[in-house]
Amino acid sequence: MSNADMISAFVNRQSFIELDARERAQSLMDSGSWRELVGPFDRIESPWLPAQGIAPQSDDGCVVLKGTVAGEAVVVIALEGGFQAGSMGEVSGAKMSTALDLAAQDSQNGTKTTAILLLETGGVRLQEANLGLAVVAEVMASMLALRRHAPIITVIAGTVGCFGGMSLAAGLSSYLVMTREARLGLNGPEVIEQESGLEEFDSSDHALVWAIDGGEQRVAMGVADELVLDDVQSIAAAVRRYVAAGLPPVHRSEQFEIYRKRTAALDTSSQIDPLTLRDSWNGRTAIGGAQ
Amino acid sequence: MSEQVGLRGKAWFRALTGKELPMIGDPPSVLTADAKLGDDTARFLCVVPNAQARFPCARHGEVGLEEAYTLAARVREAIDRDASGNRRPIVAIVDVKSQAYGRREETAAIFLAAASAADAYASARMKGHPVITLVVGQAISGGFLTHGYQANRVLAFDDKGVVIHAMHKEAAARITLRTVADLERLGHEIAPMSYDIRDFAKLGLLHKVLHVENPDRPAPATIAQVQKELIGAVIDARAGSTDLSNRLDSEGARQMRKAGRTARTYLQAQWTKP
Image 1 (tube, one colour):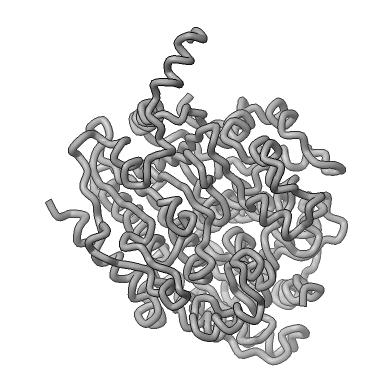
Image 2 (cartoon, rainbow over the protein chains, first blue to last red; image 1 turned 90 degrees about the vertical axis):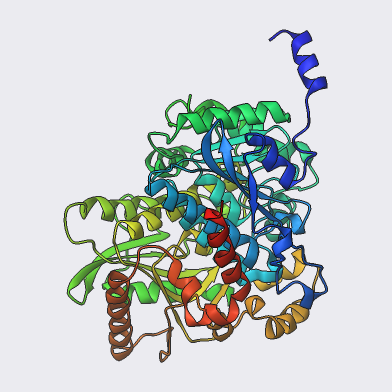
């Protein structure tokens, strides 16, 4: 692509990040194919937030749409980063794990149903603490059960990113698509700074944060599959490609032998340079993505 | 309390397996052994503190990169060995303060390490291994998601040294901009926020809470009692489903997870509706 084409694509794109969870989910599916399950009018809300003076939301920040992508059955589950930072509570977690279970059931009964997760989440909702942690474990269990029959495509677009327990869910995905704006990590920079000190991680150093957690780095080091522009058409095209690709021959989270060796080879006497890691890990020895 | 993390885990690993050393090639922070459990030979796994760990943020019993990949490897090894025979029970002894909070870990994608260990435990469960978790001390946050929370059955000691939680108290207070005192008060009012194992038990996530004498120094009778409970959990797991549906269908969940159960019922009904 020439520079002129790239600039034109950048200027004319329709931002995905600026869409809310519902619009994001809809934008990826065949037009008119989707219907929302347990939507806001069903009014199943968090019973724990009002007691803490926090307004609940009538979809609990989790949007479930059933429909098709390029004619193939899919369920899209989108977390709303604008509500409690997309955190997982009792209700949002139950919606997500149940939708994954039903996709697995359909897949086993002959209608392969791919799950597409749009993760914008800080992880466990601390106001529902132990139920939040429990639903994350249940979502992971449901993902692993579905993954035996149909792929799970995860998109992390930003700007919340994907952190905490839900980063493990991202790690269990068949395919992981990220934008340059997105971040993915177990512990957010603020949490590391609080727990281990400023010298361990200065969370105000945004260049450092993105150098480690950013989509470009995660793809370049081979732990995510594809870097996409913040553009509805580009992201929809990537999702269509992975739906068509079907299950990968092996999932990244099954490749512990490769990563155990890589961990053993790390020089831990000082901080690890993210760019060096790109060179040494560059994804060539690990299978991931449909490439 | 933080100095105690992992010591209890090690004591119970020794009590149940008669061993206290890692397998050859493993870091000192992950103990794995096969030992008799009733008529079975079970695989026991435990994460313990290693003050000399290569990763400075994983020296106090946290689950870091080496720990997670070692757990994944040792659980997968048991799956492979039993591919054509009796599926051995896998017992996770849990006393972990958290995941490792370090920059090295984030740079090297600890999320994937943690996912790999959870994947191994869940794969064992789905293949028919009874996966039993015994919480003897702390089971916090990503540490528990990585090591223990994918089990068919979770047992915990009824003891004030046992804490199962999404985040340890001090960090949760800082992040939610509350005081520790506020958090403790909220824990009494709002069950899922409590740090008390008896409140946790009300959520219906545990198979059983065990009353044991002096869990820091297990006596032979106490060890025998816990073995008997583990054997019971293995029998129960073998008779049940290989998913985690029991957690949402338990008596406790019927009381405490009404909203989640309603969401599930609605979604199931609407899924097939034309």
